[in-house]
Image 1 (cartoon, rainbow, N blue to C red):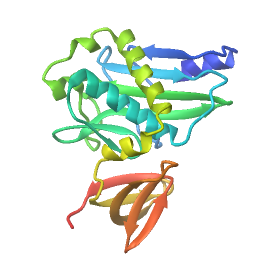
Image 2: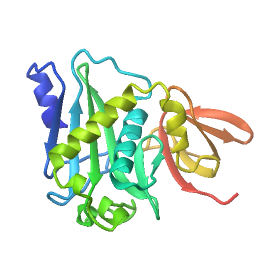
Image 3: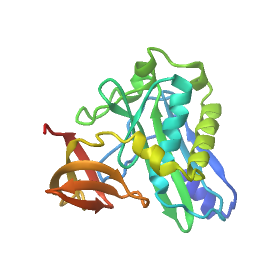
Image 4: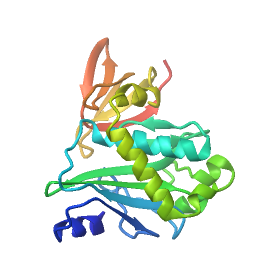
Length: 230
């Protein structure tokens, strides 16, 4: 993502894909979260959108939808999306892919990291369960043997999702814990407010919808915690 930002700041107006074999400063949406990988074991990419790109509503959620569709197509496995855009894989619903969207001086950047081999997350923090395509399928599909081609394929799927007028219904069909009782840490991660409610879905802007004490409430930021027994 830093390299994609540098390209944009140098004046390149077009679209670009920047891929790394490994990274030493991978970061997540929340402070202190790092994306840990082993060299050659993950698909690590940032999409630099062209300078004339007009952002769309719920872009981070749509990006997640596009990546999920690409992985499902390549693996034949059913996946889920944990709001806003973590891609989860069965059977433990571990995190298969993380996504970070940023806006830098008017340019949109969509960064994603997909665990391909089990070794990709061997040093990951055990507090955050991880999954890989190798574990999901029992092997690494040939479609991931060429990481440059895989990056282009996933990017095309993201672009289709960004243009998909039916994204909302499709996203909700993949939403992890929909209809279940959940814990939600609302607001800033340094001082979150713990809320319990029923996860109903997302609105057209991508905000999370919870039913809390019988009232329907929406949240623009925060993090879903674990499921709770009803």
